[in-house]
Length: 383
Image (spheres, helix red, strand yellow):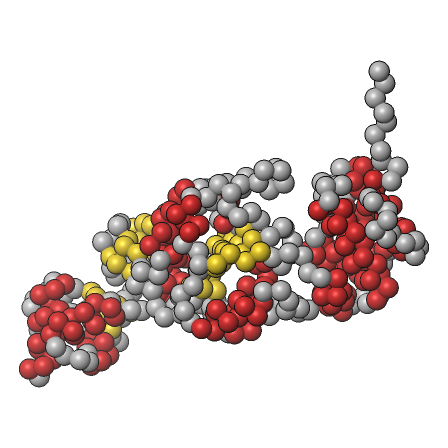
């Protein structure tokens, strides 16, 4: 390879830093350019590219470095021990038909549009649209999102990556955290409070500083636009009432790295009616009266739940389940019964009875202290 003095200075500097014939990344190209005082090395990346974010330095043992087309890597070539096909995938979420923006949608949109690294923890009861809201924000803004469902088994290998057998060879495959950092997209830690202390591997990631991959001695710096969002049914302090069994008390240092915590309630009745009507339109069965009754029914149950009168609640997600069942079976009471059958028999019957009263136009005003408990009072103990 015939090189000008400036180009040769870059190659010599990079070779001294990374080794003769080494395969280096875009970040390492920048480091060598800075050290050599050569501001641009685009010629090198164009002539010596051998794969995604992979460039081969000329070797003294070979007279010239072949252009990318001549030495395109095959499946059997180990490149920095990394194997992945994520760069070929479009990770922008698909739009959800009938989605209704509400609550903290606007605030989260501002965070995403800012492009700043600003970790967010979203907490709230199950089925109120935490994850869907984040997904649909990214769908609207055409921004990529990588969602990881956290469990007690999730560890550093799952998050940052590890060695895998690829085409008969052992290669280091980057995990979803590394992919999100290198793509400059959002990382969603879904059901974050189900994780263990192994999530502490994300401490440097949550500071926005990058992370060191110990297994291959490589430092990864996040691209602009990278951010972390987490969803959970608790605030990382465990579930005292046992409703969310399996949730854990998360390390305080881990939680402290989230800049803000957003508490997501169930939507107001007016918003929930739009959501239910949207579901009906999507499933092809629109019944405004049924939608109004379902929202009123859910609202009364939630009030009683918050007052400690019942142990179960009807979520927005469950209303969607009922609407879908109604589109399939065409029977309101059958649809409700099938969708509340997951509760114990007394709760199921009280929920069904409450709906019949609402559907019949019977008022369930606040003076009825606990409409769900009518007829369910315990007998006085005999002495």
